[in-house]
Length: 358
Image (cartoon, rainbow, N blue to C red; front, side):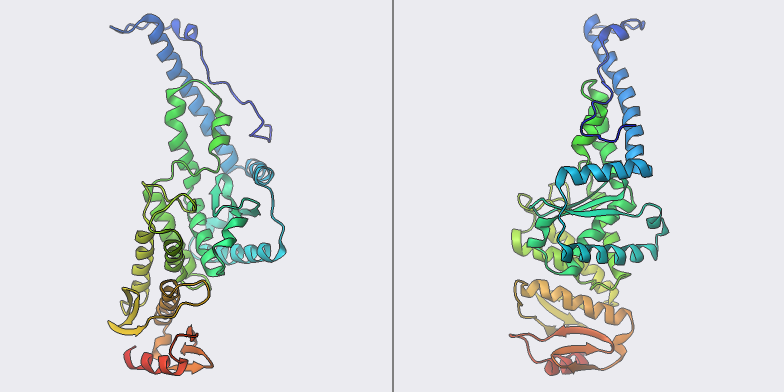
């Protein structure tokens, strides 16, 4: 089988009306030639659908196919070679693969291929064959490794549940069955990285899996909510003109809904003790802190990072210990909670308050 799916002509779907004319069919109120065209399209579409499934299986389920697709992606988008970001990407994938493997060993069956491409928009994607790529433009908006890890965990959630293949079949199937024109490979090539066919339930499933993966890693679970707060701060609740990541389409969850879903999970992780109420972080329903903005991070975004540290402290039993100040960092047992910055109260004051209300 040829490797270059973007240059291959593929199988022609068109079947002539004369091929269907041999069938004995009668249909009132349908012209003979018109009915023949309909039958030809249906038969051709069925053949095309079978070919589509074979091709998707090849690129998604065979090592030869997925490696061929990976090379095509690199040729199409270009490869970014900056060592610092590539080293970070390798570290993130190593950490997330181990985190996924803690509950889903199938991640080792098709190890993820990944690279940073030269596209300058904010995006990342997972397509057939566990092939993933991150636009270099994403780094213009996200500087926290924890938040980048959340984006990639979401995409790996899609990959683990085979959403790219399912979505492609869903989006291409009706078109192929309805029209016997064009080529199967051309249709696959045009949709290989578009994310078409991903549904709202798939997006929620990938979001929830991302939380599970991050919770089994060394990343701050609060980054799951923080990254969505960051997108809200940058573009509003559900804009889609600038950010393609994790889809902002109308049939997908809003940024706010996704942030709040993660905030709820963080509250549950803390045993119901920690919550965010109108920008105020509360412990046992008592006001704890409203973190000051730091650098390009708003107060709201930073609040979820502190919330994640507290949730982890409760989950892992650190809250049984006393809080204390280690320099400018508030510690709860062995768990760092927050580092006091300009505009915050001192670490000693925050630790004292934490001991009163935890």
